[in-house]
Image (cartoon, rainbow, N blue to C red; front, side, top):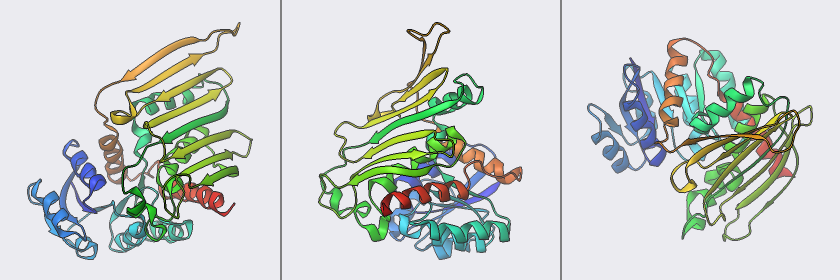
Length: 328
């Protein structure tokens, strides 16, 4: 059984810890660390035999540790990942994996040098609606894909402009680097091709901060498949919408559960005579299980010595698009 440590014991780190309880006989949490030692102690107290540390340096030297989950602020994701690999650990790092593509490149080289697995936390791929949608696309039922249209937004909260996400030194950017990576990653996943920045508009409309609160992007593959994406933290009703258009039909994914609404996939299948499509609706009102499915896949990657589907190269491709958008 793989022994796992978590660096960063906030909301996401706690979710990762909880997901491990649902994966039987594959991995066990043995250590956690946070610069706020109270957070580390609180998380460790919820699980039997978990050691709490107040620094990631101490954690990666924990005896017999196999895997490090890195769920910190963006400014330390890359450094901890690099040092964890050097300490002979496999790494699960939350998106976007770094503040810049230049920070990701050394991680790519280290994975080769030390022969370690690195997976990036893009859990949206593992939502039930997306798993079903991917099977429909991969089976060729939609025909050749033409374009994707997606929106992802939340309304933030009072004081948001003073939080770490509004500080570019900690975050690397604004809403585009926060929720944007999910939409870019999902689009590249479905197209099965890298996307390149084509046009866009990035603005700060509402929040008094130096980073963006809205980003509108047009991205294209090498064969002109287009992704039209909008991410926002001025979305006063939390929204998630992801539409995939093929020559033979359309998939419409709405909601992610919770405040984003019931997760639902609608499949519009074109008929030979065209006109109104054949419509099939799949609803997923049950609790989101993407966190444990994603983590279980990573532990299987290690045990079966296979390349993670969502590896560090996926994060590099996403970050490259984000940087191009910010430069333009």
